[in-house]
Image (cartoon, rainbow, N blue to C red; front, side, top):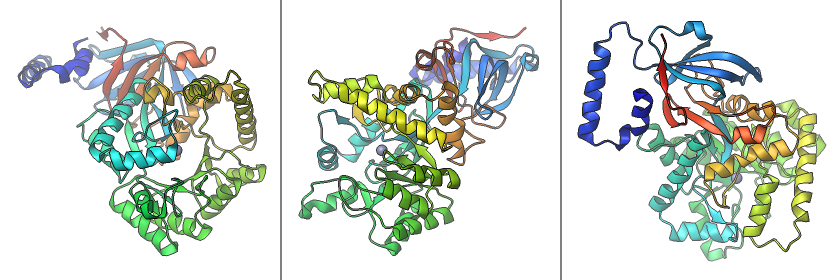
Length: 454
Ligand SMILES: [Zn+2]
């Protein structure tokens, strides 16, 4: 019990109190020869989600030491006097991954994206923007999302700064995979800016001017230590778009540095071009033709369908004052989304879960992000397939399949638990997070006791 509460409350103590706690722990464990090591924890899982095999297993035990999982086995592996976290009444899963976030961007439902972008660039300092981003990032941990792929609209590498501050332990937050500024054609996604202020866009996007510039842009990003590259294959509603040769240069240069490239794409043509250029994933892809889906399946290009649930869309439309009493368009939207996802699944394209929610509709950003689960469920995806798209498949496409999104030996100890029956009541269960561990540290726990085995 102390161990658990220690982790949760340690930071609230003064320096003197912290030193005393460390000293007492040292005495306590030093005098207990043969006692399980302080850093060894055994987590009893009533049900464990095996993300690789996409199945639920009963009565498993996860041995965690420091930041990693040592092994996954059964109850016999627990030694005498071991520290146990008893999650036998719950379903235990690897921490979720949201593959499409913008933690450094938030607009109100009534705001225009372009106007908000310019407002943010001119009237929100980098320091203020980053601190606000920190609060949003932290909220992901509360809902069981322990990793996010943050895909731009984050100023000049503020996402990288946030990632580094979290990794070094200065602040709490999810594991961030940062793309840095989005690479796009003239004007980026910011529309309606007068010619004399076009330079403002360079503070948010890396505008690509030709093949050679594309190579230079990737090298600049490599030096800023990004984890991946995000491009805009099209700039809708701006009409500009990257050429296939520019995208090829980006992909080739990025791959030579071990980085993958994902492409924002609204039109079918831009997705087709980006796939020809060799990108690993398509973001959004709202208008993908069957022939494009076939090509994606052949080339193993994944899709991140950034959709929203009926509830989300209704709340959004009310806040945005789209609500004139007739919400029929929401039903049409849901139907279109369902039709699209059905085709994606039928074509065998890998789906990776991503939210892309950057509008404030109330609640935290993390709460807003898990709406993707509701959206995919409403669109007809099966519960376990949704879980796999937010764990193993996401990690696989980050080249992190042995590290995150999975519960197995040598993986990071990113472990969460939910209350309920995933197969029978998917939404209510997935929203009932009772336990969150990231890198072996406990960030949330409704479990009152840590027991000692006898
Ligand atoms: Zn986005």
